[in-house]
Amino acid sequence: AVATAAVPPHAGGAGVSTANGGAGVGAGGVDKVARDLADARTHNGELERRLAVLEEAVAQAKGSEASQVARAEALENALDAAMSTHAARRSMVKKISKAGAKVLRCREDLRDAEEKLGGALTAAQELFEEAAAGVAEEAGERDGQ
Image (tube, rainbow, N blue to C red; front, side, top):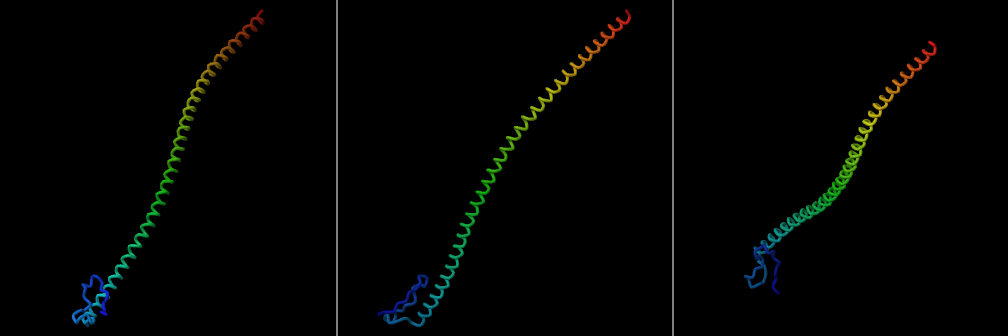
């Protein structure tokens, strides 16, 4: 049986000596295989570290995405509440404007009523004075007869 060693693809195919008819691996070849194996292990360690970093970045991105979705939902709810509040305030402003217009109409009606009442009082006062003068005149005529 011929001894063969697994050689990483980047090792360049060296490591198995067939110069002596396939009887084994030469001393220089063993050192090269050992170095290639150590290099491959170092390279694998680096790849594993990079993979871990990428996996962490993916996990953070997923967490960040969930956080952004939650924040977007919160903002949407806040916007809905603000729009609802705005609509309620706008409705209240309309009601207040209508009430203000009604107050102005009532003040005008009250002013008109006060003017009519003032005119009626003046007319009543004149009638009262005429009646009093007429009564005094009649009383003076009776006393003078």
